[in-house]
Length: 137
Image 1: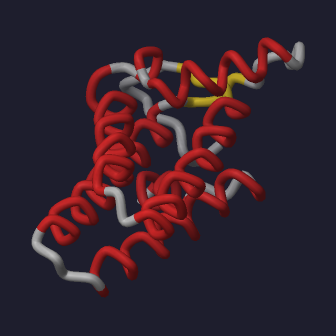
Image 2 (image 1 turned 135 degrees about the horizontal axis):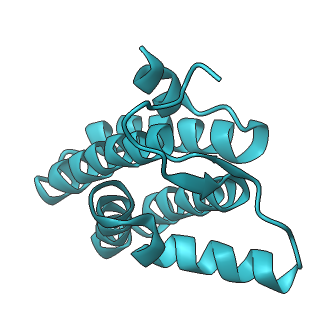
C-alpha cells in the first residue's frame, strides 16, 4: 500500500468512508437544488471535524456507522491518514463554496461543487480516493 503514513497508525473503516462520500455528494446536490447555504456550511463543519478534530465526532461518520451496524456489516479497516487528508481537502472545497455563495458568485460554487461531487462519487462508488492519491505524492 503506497498510501500509508509512517507517522500515524490511525485506522478507519473503509465502508464508513464510502458512505460518508455518498452523503457528501447528496449534500452538495441538495445545496444546488435548494441554494440553502446552511446545507453547505454543515458539510464544511463535518469535514472540519473529520479532518482536524477526530472522525469519531463527525455527524456523517456517526450516521454511517449506525447504518453499517444496522446492516450487520463488519468493518474493513484501512490506513486513516490519507482519508483524513482527503477530509481536509473536502473542508477547503466546501469552505470555498460557502465563501463564494455568501459573496453571491454563482459559477464558482457550481464548478467547485461539481468537482466535490465527482470526487465524492469516485470514492463512494468505486473506492477511488482522489485526495488519497494527492496525499501519496
